[in-house]
Length: 374
Image (cartoon, rainbow, N blue to C red):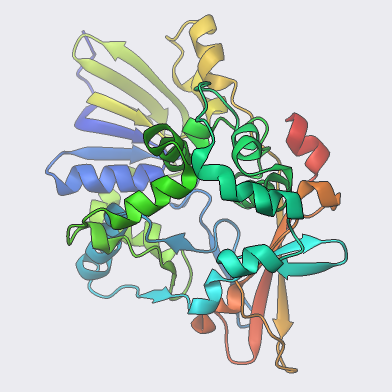
């Protein structure tokens, strides 16, 4: 039996107040569940953090979001309404669809259609011809095939080097030859498995009838006025700050006869214990051995041995007095170009993100040798 003295109770305990943890807690509380969130940092948002300095607004984590699913559209709509206009979303202009890839001594536009794919210097001519046969190529049989091997098999090596590799570096800082497709890019994996081809699958998906809810997934790129931190802060407001404990330490979860008992020390150095029916963990895998001490070593090793690629982000503020052209989402640098930088994002996409005549560039530095072995 759990000692009743000083025992708090809730239905769901969520570990981590990043975007995943807060969104989970928000959706549960919206459905009527009693939730509580514990977070080691003294703020919400996790990797999302906005900074303001000398008229510039820049992010230390992700710079934008994408309305890739109806759930994203509904969440953003809920938050902007429920927070009574606390923040406003801003959508990137069409120029955000332009992505640059470094090759040789300059950036080139990533092809956005058949004609630009034929003329681009990024891909070998033999691979441009090879792609014509993609719809008739046999589908793979290895469920754990890497993204690199799958793309090379269907599209060719130059597509892997100058499209797949920089894309995965920008999203995961990851290696296409180690990332498993069905986990990293499940939609791409299912196109081949369900339709036998990327091209045939894309055409079939485009021709499928869409419900009004499906059409909410516009794929548009967005940020928030004042920075992305506005989004987790709005979620925290909606959940209720009394249901979020920040600056906690020594968090441990153990099974009990009544459910799950979570103990921790709060930011006032008070020991607390909280009993819940369910526990959701959204922290890094490296935190799990201490968080879940009841899990056996062999089982825990299989869960907690995930690799995290080291990346450093540098924000550079530029006074745009000369009217430079930043009409692109940014530029990515493929691994085969042997540069110690993953890419550059142009925050000027959102004019309200900085004052007039200013823009912020975000440079993602990655020590690729370390990233490939980490």
